[in-house]
Length: 204
Ligand code: TYD
Image 1: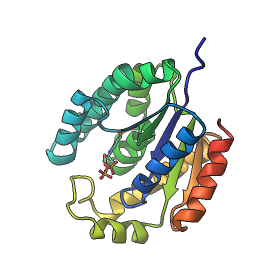
Image 2: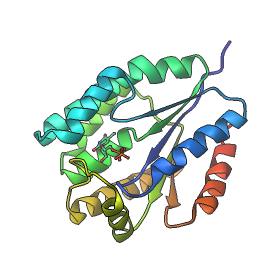
Image 3: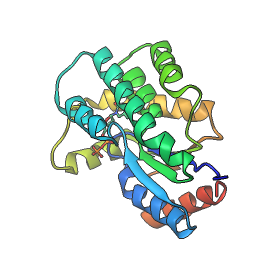
Image 4: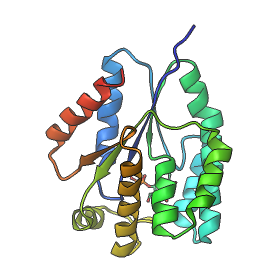
């Protein structure tokens, strides 16, 4: 019988630098002999990537945004995440549902109950085994965002939006300390990677 794989997610405000560490996590797991699938949200499937284009670049109502995030997530779970885990692969995703709590609830102000209802519907109790939350003070993230080339709809938001997003992420980490591990993303890459390696060793 195949042992199911594990599901790891990376989170943080835009500009926290999480994408830099995605490849490190995947390579680390591959060195342990695991099959690894690297993916992202919104996106990860052909339909999900089409929804990502709309979400990042088309103006829309905040509830529409939330519903499309979860439509993309349903497709991602059904078409990629659940089948990969079932065959024993490990899945590493650049963002997942914690981002909906942080951005749509914290950032946009949508009631937490709406997100929880969609989460229960789409995930049926499924959750990541480990979430790495890359945390940086707003001014550091803002400097990294302005250095980036072209901003999408989220990256163009005001600093106050990102302060609320950060707070929502940290509140979730406080509520679920065993799953969500907070990393100080001001630290250098080498230091962060040794911390990430330590957390991954607890899981393999
Ligand atoms: P991001 O992951 O930052 O990709 P890139 O590094 O290419 O910019 O972009 C995805 C954006 O989508 C990010 O700004 C956060 C947002 N997002 C939400 O608002 N809610 C969600 O549930 C998810 C998954 C993402």
